[in-house]
Amino acid sequence: MKTIATQVRNKILKNLYEVSFIRDPAEFAYEAALEKHKSHLPVLSSTDWAIVETLETEGVAVTSLEQLSIPSTPQLLQAAKKLIPKIPKAISGDENEFVVHATSEQMMEYPEIFLWGLEQRLLNIAENYLGLPVAYHGSYFRRDLANQVERKSRLWHMDSEDRKLFKVIVYLNDINDERGPFQYIPKDITSKVADSLKYKTGYIKDKTLQQVISQSNYKSCTGPSGTVVIAGTASVFHRGKIPVDSDRYSVFFDYTSRQPKFPFYCKSSLPMEDLHLLSTKFSEEQKQCVFWR
Image 1 (tube, rainbow, N blue to C red):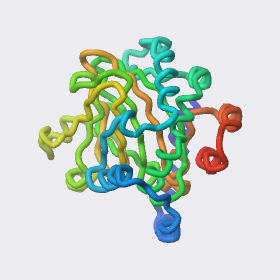
Image 2: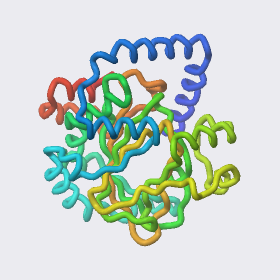
Image 3: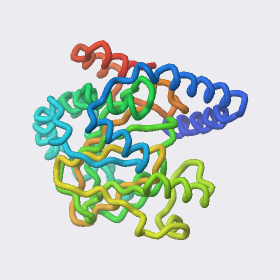
Image 4: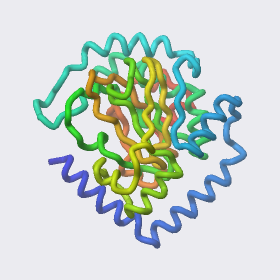
């Protein structure tokens, strides 16, 4: 009941935010904030700057844990290895279930996963892409089930919480085209498709998309365990392809700016009391990223 009430509230708020006398000043403030923050963006290595440029042009960049060489990666992998066998095949018994998430209690057992998303290198890349100080919305440990359910994130969509989104996906098992890779349509083609379909928001079935675009334009992000997909999910159509061979295990890390377009869509992966418990491990900057409201 709470979920339905929240959805109704969010829809009303979204319609309100899109009224010109509210939207236009917000967009003006956003552009002014971008301009003001330009000189405060962290300096990146050429490798990390290449990721930002790829996000700007293509919409998605693929790298690996090894290439990113983030200091706490061994702790992330050790925690993930322990957590994988604890994620059940199903929870609700609902035949439409297609993904099982680790519970907040499980994520608190292995805080290394959440903390990995606050590593300075990731925050610096995110900030340069977003152009503004970063809001970190947390991490989601997922088991995507090998079944034929085609709904929600398995349908084509663009995320709409902010004008730009920064999402990091770490594969925890080898992912080929039959194991549910993250799929996207390059940024330049996405904009044409969105125009053709008069797309604003929501999910699109594959057969609808194929009426305006060839499947040859779909890009699948495949790779061995440890592959990292970094995506600007507000600027490209994307989906999780249905896994056929085996379940997909992955961790998602979500970021926006601290002045998102629709703040009511932004929620943390952990309850506030858990965030306060973890905050003893945060630097001052990390606290600002988590408690950005």
